[in-house]
Image 1 (cartoon, rainbow, N blue to C red):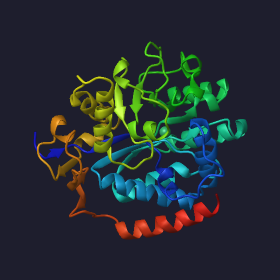
Image 2: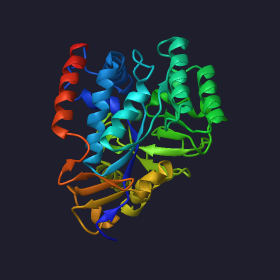
Image 3: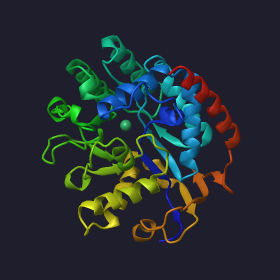
Image 4: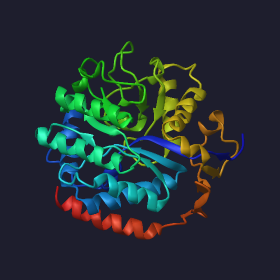
Length: 340
Ligand SMILES: [Zn+2]
């Protein structure tokens, strides 16, 4: 083991949430996860326009790169700016120098027409060559027709589906509703309340910090037979932090747990975006092995190469101006927060 690894993969992100920090308090304090969605995220996503999405993605991609993450598996929603939104995110990531695998999360929250437009955005983006999956918000916000349409489109396009599954107790019906639709190339985010004995196929995306923050419970992903990968669910792009947290959470329910398990989840990101294996991150610490990294906070990349090109060096991105991205993102955050 040395101080060099492949580029890390964030297997579940929401780049649109980067500008949420510092947003005005919701009209009342959410009392559970359902209210967190209603009072925070579903007000925020409805207020997004393409310019906000662009700078939110630029900042999110920058922060990923600053943490050695060279590939982002993103799940996007912006019900009042659907068409073209995936292009905007793909371009922002490419400009910063980060790989992306995108999906628009369809939902019937805004009627069947909203779901149809979301599905059309996935199809348009993938058919013109975008690197994408078909997105579903979650079974509990979709009709059976929408779930079947998304699964059918994904099969037709030869890609997987990226969907939230049993994040909160309100989505307990998901395993029954998705039964028979899932395939091995599906990505199942969270699965906190998914029974251990279930029939869903796909990789389970574990997001320890988000689950703690939303008080939804511990997914305990080691109990599943499915492969597991690590994400942030929109709370930054630091996957080493997700690894550390995944390890101590596992340890909190079983003192014999080894960091090698959470490390294998980190490594499973490379099955989702194999190109990131060719990227190269030189870290401030050596050796980069699970037993060291689990107990060494603050490890930073010194240099990041993506596709052979140095895109981060001397604490700075090489393709873009970090200070400008932060300034433009701040301007867009002000516009966004004023709409809430
Ligand atoms: Zn999510």
